[in-house]
Length: 194
Image 1 (cartoon, rainbow, N blue to C red):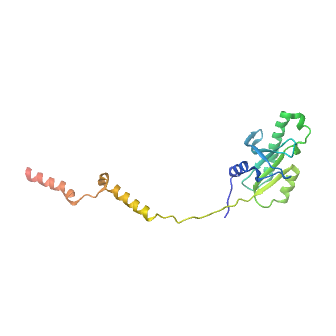
Image 2 (image 1 turned 135 degrees about the vertical axis):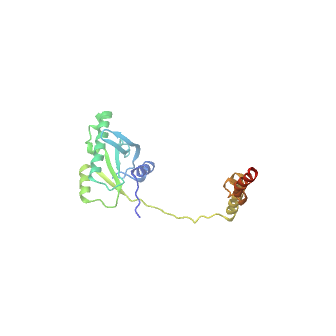
Image 3 (image 1 turned 30 degrees about the horizontal axis):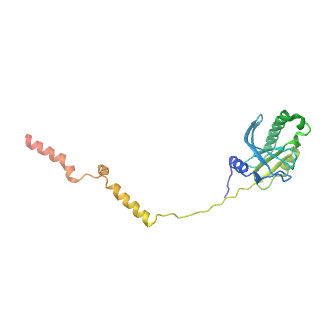
């Protein structure tokens, strides 16, 4: 059975479980923003990682619910460039000392188990880390659910009470006498008048 996880589901999970993924060097990531608009688009997750007393560095994550492509790699690079530009405006003196490619951790997370070699080479050249996931589906079937004897008796009692309500008499079939009454009245009129 195939189970597809949406990007939104993956984003929710990662944002609420920050230890679910780490940087290549094993650092924990602290997510600080979701669906952050930048000039080149919308970043799925923005976070930071830090080692010891060092200044934290940004982490940009692009999430996919379909297999990762080269387009996803360039997409996360555009987002990382936007974040680098923002950091230069924020503290250019500090970030000017870093090459853009090494100032921001870039990651793409998508479904699958194997990544094609050409995609790995491209990711390496762009400084993008690729992560994959495989959703697990735990299906537990319970039942069958049936009424207990007491519930069925209670149901029948309420049904009897409701059906005794006079409002339902409008749905009763007419009795034979009431069907003949208009004809009998007509005959009575004829006999009286003629």
